[in-house]
Length: 101
View 1 (cartoon, rainbow, N blue to C red):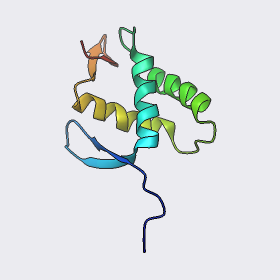
View 2 (view 1 turned 90 degrees about the vertical axis):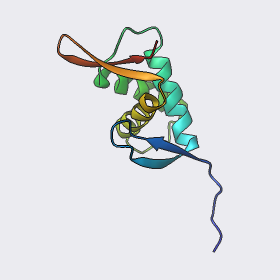
View 3 (view 1 turned 180 degrees about the vertical axis):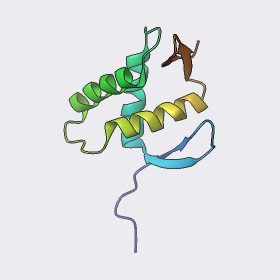
View 4 (view 1 turned 120 degrees about the horizontal axis):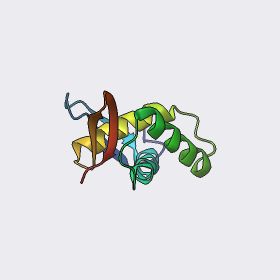
């Protein structure tokens, strides 16, 4: 039986465990762009702040999206950390995310 669609997949890797998953590129690319947009010009954002920003952006771009935006945000943010685009650091006891310099 042939596949119903030929969606492109993007491999997502966790930076610490090396676990890999495949996401539809139609989801990966907009969430990745939203994360980068949210972190651009920021000194650092908590995951909660980042997730809220990404949710606002994705809801505007993809109003019919029904999956968990916070779950995709953390998964793709971790992949961006693996790729050296985003970094996590601790400041005053708070874990923050920013674009890597």
